Amino acid sequence: QSIRLFPYNIVLIGFMGTGKTAIGDRLSQLLRMDTIDTDVLIERQMKTSISKMFEEHGEKYFRQIEKDMVKRVSLRKNTIISCGGGVVLDSENVEHLKETGKIVLLSAQPEIIYERVKNDQNLPVLKGNMTVEFITKKMEERKDKYESAADIIVDTSHKDKEEICQEIVYKL
Ligand code: S3P
Image (cartoon, rainbow, N blue to C red; front, side):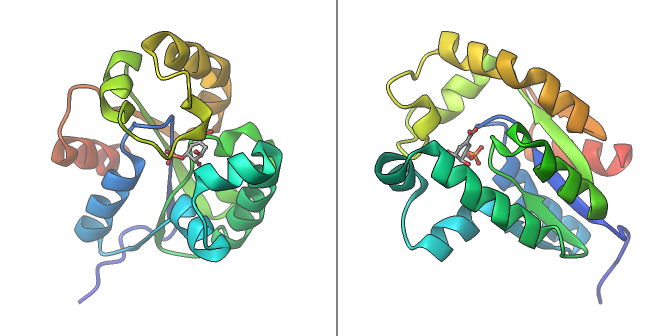
């Protein structure tokens, strides 16, 4: 049987390496909600990787496709939506997501993010700049946008998946 505790979508935002996808998957088991990931949907739709899209067509092109995808997934209900880390760069994305969902910002310390993402080859924003310093700078640039979009904020730095999910459910 299906438990419908949340009459809205749960939208996970945050910097790369804050655990959006992993937490989305675990929350979907706990709450028996569907889960989707905008990056995965984009890669499936475009039949290519995000890295290749950046390389071949540039970031602007990717952001437009991301924007179309966000608009589309915002129409869903009872879904956990994990977003790409740059989704907050366009305020219209946030507006769409807010219409049907509660926004959960996952945060983490730059050193911890670095450890989680350092071997990930599919992160074009960090390509050639995989350092704690650059991650710190990028996070700082986006900080206000992340925080003003968020309904709740959960720090994932020193917690396991179960603790993070419990905190989200409690705070929502
Ligand atoms: C991006 C984050 C990525 C992906 C793309 C751009 C960003 O998503 O959308 O590489 O600008 O922060 P994840 O945060 O899921 O890695």
